[in-house]
Length: 387
Image (cartoon, rainbow, N blue to C red):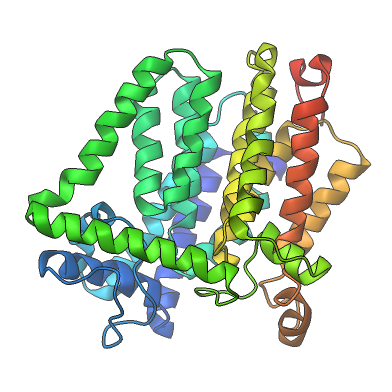
């Protein structure tokens, strides 16, 4: 049975069916507000309407992404919703499949384990018509391109992820551990300029500048709102900040917590002699994926697929001990399954949401992983992961 499940066609068929079913299901339930935000953003762009305002007659909540992303939604603006929802789901499934199958240094069995750890959380994300699964896949694809010395495409996937949600830029830190750093910086400048200016294909420069001002203003407003106790769309946020507030009654400005997280994220990079080890490099991308969620001031349930992807990469590369198995069980129980009907709705309302239980396993795994990166011995990084 394990051999069948670890086959590439098996995983491809599972994701194909999942994409079709989710697209049809969401359309039947008329529960696709996020997709409407994306689809209408192209019309707002070409009609010179503020992308970042409220458009209550079309959808609730606001557009949070770059002007380039709104341009990428042009094909969907021309499609009927039922077809657009299916295609959107299938695109998420396709890039997710690519990211897993192309990961270097892992057997098919390990890739299958990784897939099934993430799968339920992946479905939760695409059922919300979110972009988070794509962002996770793009960041992993950037890592894969670095591993294959395709620096040009590594820069492309990083900028593509950042054009959707700005925290995708975290993957750019990978360039520290690979050669040809100057060339990577040059490619980043190229792709950033291209993505920043590509909306000029449909709007004039003055309009584009106005949209960027609106976007920066919105991001600043959202970040400040968290520190003043007026969260943008999720309270408490599924993050270290939310955990500190709800578990320990500690309120620290989010920026300070995030800066501390950045220091811890970058600290293992001083161990340059470890760059040669594949396990160390895979731990670094795993750490980055989890970091993007647990230090995000507006993380919500559907965002956690990024952290779970990172945790799964960590697990399949990690030497197994009782702590590792307990952390995996904790992740599956409270992060992956807490948003499903396995947990009674009342329990989710009274405990899971108020006490940010969904993100806590990701926080624990990240600190364990950072300790491994900072204090792990050379021998623990050099050999193959133990089953």
